[in-house]
Amino acid sequence: MNPIREKAEYWLTKGYFSGLRFCPKPVIYGTCRVLAALFYLFATQRRRITLNNLTIAFPEVPAKERKRIARAAYDHFGQLLAESAMILAGKISQSDLDEMVDGSEMEKLRALEQRASRGVLAITGHLGNFELLAHYTGSHAERQSHVVARKGSNQLIDDRIVTPMRESFGNKVIYKSRALPQIVRALKKNEHIGLLIDIKTNARQGVPVTFFGKQTLGLTSSAFLQIKLHPLVVPMTMVRIAPRKYKLVINDPIEWSDNGEPIEKQIAELTQIHQQALENLIRQTPEQWLWMHNRWKNQ
Image 1 (cartoon, helix red, strand yellow):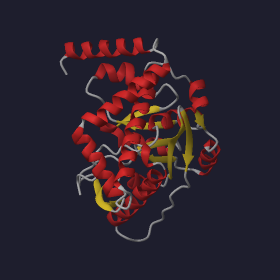
Image 2 (cartoon, rainbow, N blue to C red; image 1 turned 45 degrees about the vertical axis):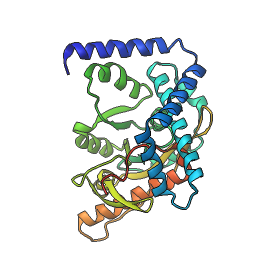
Image 3 (tube, helix red, strand yellow; image 1 turned 60 degrees about the vertical axis):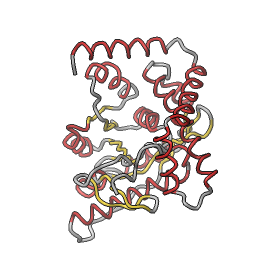
C-alpha cells in the first residue's frame, strides 16, 4: 500500500474510534442497527444471496418465516458491528464483558482443559458474537489462547488498532500467512486455538462436504490438526439471549481415532463431522449466523 494512503487511513480510523469513545452506547447500537436494516433493503444482491441460502438450508420453512430470519440476521449483524466498534474504541472493558456474558459453561471448558494433553482446538463459525467468544474465553481460560485471523491490507491499522484489540483480553493473534507452525507449537504446549471453519475455501484447502443438505467445500485444517496432533476439538459459540446479553455454549468434544483408512479419506470424514457440528449450532439460533456470504458458491 502507498505509505501516504496507509497513514491517512490509519489517522482517519484512529480519529473515528477516538470520537466513538464519547458516543453513548445506545446511540452506537441504534445507528448500527439502522445501517444494517438499510443494507438489507438496498443491497439487493446480498439480500438475494441471504434468502437463497435460507431456502437451501430450510426448504421446509415458509418463505415468510425465511424472510423473518433474514431480517433478524441483519439486525444481529448490526448489533455485532456496534459491539465490535465499541471494543475497538475501548468502550467495552473486562467488567463490561463479564456483565454481558452468562459464562456458566466456562467451568466445562476448564474441566476439558484438565483433560487435554495436546491443547484445545475450539471450532466455531460466524455465529453469535464470535469476537466476544474469543475475548471471553481468552480472558477466563487457564491456559494461553490464540485466535487465527487474516491480516488486513493496512499494516498500521493492523499493528496499532486491530491486533491490540484482539489481544486486549489475553489472546495472542496468529495470522493465516504463517499460521500452521505457530498453531502446532501452541497445541504441543497444551494451549488453546480458535478456528472459524465456515469460511469459503477452494479445492486445494477443502474437501466436499454436505452442509445443510447441500454439497459445498469444507475447510480441512481442523480435521488435519485433530488427526495429526490429537487436541481436544470442542465446538463452541456465544449466542445472544437478550439485548446486550450473551450465553457461552460449550459442546462435548468431537472424538476421533485412526480407523485404518488412508489419511486423505480420514480427513474428509472428519471434516464432514466438524461441519455437521457447526450446522447443529447454527440450527439452534439461525438468526445469528452470517447468511449473507455465499457459503455454497463452490459446490
